[in-house]
Amino acid sequence: MASKAFSHSLLSQITSPSPISNRRPETTSLCSVNRCTLRSASRSPFLSLQSKPNQSSFTANCSSTDSSKDETPIELRFPAFPTVIDINQIREILPHRFPFLLVDRVIEYNPGVSAVGIKNVTINDNFFPGHFPERPIMPGVLMVEAMAQVGGLVMLQPDVGGSRDNFFFAGIDKVRFRKPVVAGDTLVMRMTLIKLQKRFGIAKMEGKAYVGGEVVCEGEFLMAMGSSE
Figure 1: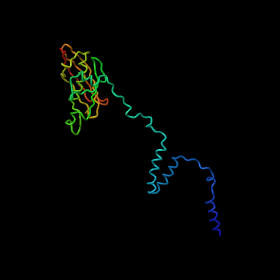
Figure 2: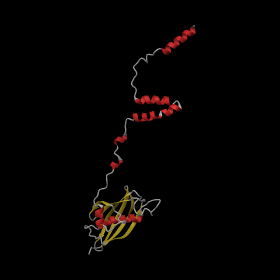
Figure 3: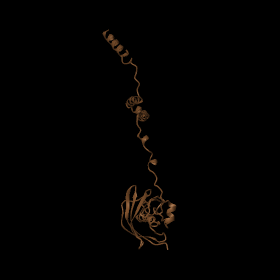
Figure 4: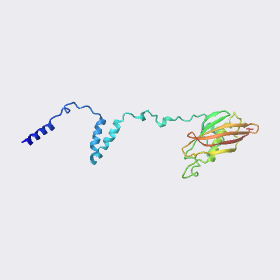
């Protein structure tokens, strides 16, 4: 009899509403609900598989900040190179033609002093099939030639007095190749006039070529020019 009374008393304590349960349930966030769902779901392998969609929803909905919204898209970050002398004007100055015209654009020109030109190195350049078939690298001699052509754009201007009919690449000195230039690179070449002897038609120039701001080639160049007569 006593045991029945004890059982009845224990049962009434379990089934009777507690003071806490009478309170109005507080609003829970989606993050809290998903946390509970994830904890209970992780107890069995089957439910763990079912909880994967909830996990991705939890991650997406709980993220309060998104740093990518404040970032500029990569295609809008870098401005294009300016055009000071375009390819049509280059063709009017230099006598070179395909496949040996190695300057696509002049982006800076100081009359009688210096010029900065670019060469867009693409896999369609005719030298890549042979140099090398498995690893396309721009030949160093063509890098030097491209730099000399940028120097020619300085020398053949009226400011210096050269002529496209009598202009020659006379020599090179102290040439160093720092890094390989590969297909997809943009070769930026600066040529600066150091010394000019108009009497003998000889000019000395200093050249540096860059890819991504790093020097890939540098050296000193000798140019020989003559009059148009």
